[in-house]
Length: 194
Image 1 (tube, rainbow, N blue to C red):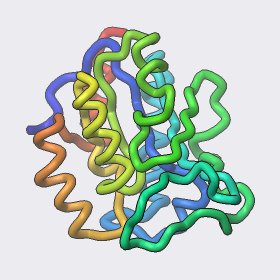
Image 2: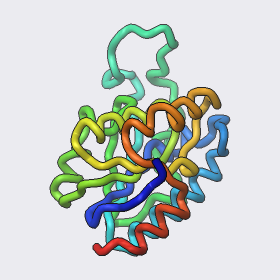
Image 3: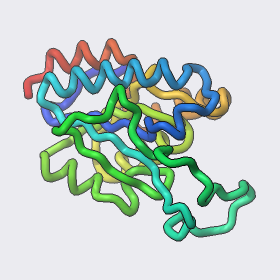
Image 4: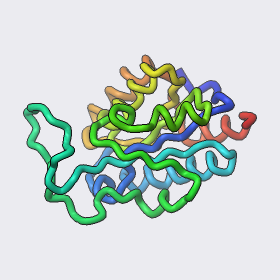
């Protein structure tokens, strides 16, 4: 379903647009393309007086606060360069924005994201970021489970794997909400009363 409406209390939530993530090779969009579109969305939301939430993933150098559990993928605790978890310059530095630090794939579990949104009366979130099938999808699933209306800015997200991105966009996201382009979302935002 194409994006049809935005609630009066809609927030933009951008996932993992930070220095250490943006250097990874992504598809179908480069990290730079996603940041440009995310910055357009953020600028429109700020101008509209709507909340902008910048979510970053961060883990202590010793890995003590990393998500536990056995996986078949090698862990990545520790060994990250200084500043890898800093929000990219094109998005950071706006005093009214909300920054949420997560330790998991999704932005809800173990954070104050839900509290921050509910205090502001938010009923809908627009999501973008990296990676589509990991942080964005995990956050979209949790937002849906928390009762938010979910909109996915599909040209403001990208993935490490083209098949994973396509699966999220074509199969998972239609079950969780509506999808649209950055331009479509900004156009709807302009028609929404704050």
